[in-house]
Amino acid sequence: VQLQAYGGGLVQAGGSLRLSCAASGRTFNKFTMGWFRQAPGKEREAVATIRWSSGNTYYADSVKGRFTISRDNAKRTAYLQMDSLTPEDTAIYHCAAGAGLISSSETMARLYQYWGQGTQVTVSS
Image 1 (cartoon, rainbow, N blue to C red):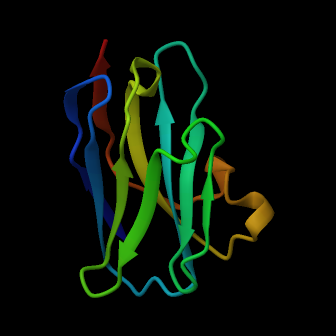
Image 2: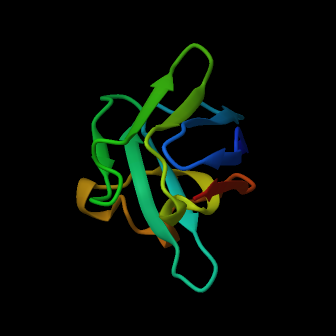
């Protein structure tokens, strides 16, 4: 399984970015896709997750109402639409795929088997 994340960049506060995570190598019906981020000096945190088959989602409280995770089965791509960005959203964002995760464990980065490279998101004030 290979994941390729892209779409980061520099944006002003209040702006938007869309991250994409293109997946290849196997079918993802039993996978959960997750977006994680890590800012300098902070621990990595789960931002949003989506179950590939059902579309069920999870959002961290800090991004609820501003970020939207989705997936396109045909393109085998997961997306993270980020609106109303703030400087606190500045971080390196990674996408990850995990098989067999139960809902209560989907925020645990260590349970994800596959990771894409990070993409930098910088929000200026």
